[in-house]
Length: 111
Length: 114
Image (tube, rainbow over all chains, first blue to last red; front, side, top):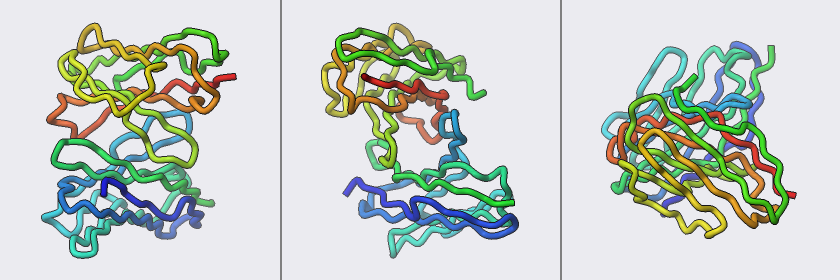
C-alpha cells in the first residue's frame, strides 16, 4: 500500500514537445505529492508539488495533474527543452510524514 | 548548490574495509536523512534523525551505522559491506521531521563494493 508506481521508465521527446510522466498509488492517506528532478551527478531537487484538494498545479512549463478518484497523478512538461533532460521522481507522503518515491523516469529531450 | 555537502563523492572499498560517509548541511535544518539510490529502484529511506535523535531505521542491516553528532552533521559508518550495497548514497535535510515538504539533497557518494 506504500508503493508508488511510476511510468514510463524512460522517455524520449523532441524539443518543443510535451513530456508526460505518470504515477499511481494505493494509499488514500497520502496527503502530499511532490516531484523531484535529478541531473546526472547531482541529488534530486524539488520541482513542483501538489496536495490532493486541487486537481492541477502549474509552475511555468511544469504542470501536475491530479486525479484523486483514480489515485493517479502526472507531470506534464510543456515545450520540453534539452535542458530538461534528467531523471524525474514522483513521491507521496503518508500521515506519518514518510515519503515514498516512485522508481524514476529518465527523460531525454532531443534537440 | 543545495547547501548539503557530501564527502567523498566516490568511494571504492573492499568487503573487509571500514569507511565513513560524511554529510554536512548549512541550512539550519533539524532533520537529516540517509537514502540509498540503486539502479532501477526507487529511492530507499535508510535513517532519519530529528534534532540529533534517530527517529527512523528502515530495517537497515547493522553493517550500516549512522551517527549524528549535531543537527548539521551526519555520518554513515560502513563495515563488512557486500557487493549488493554498491549504490549512490544520498544525504538530505529538511526543516524538521514534521516539516519535510522540501527535502534538500546532497550530490551523493557513489559507493562501489568489490
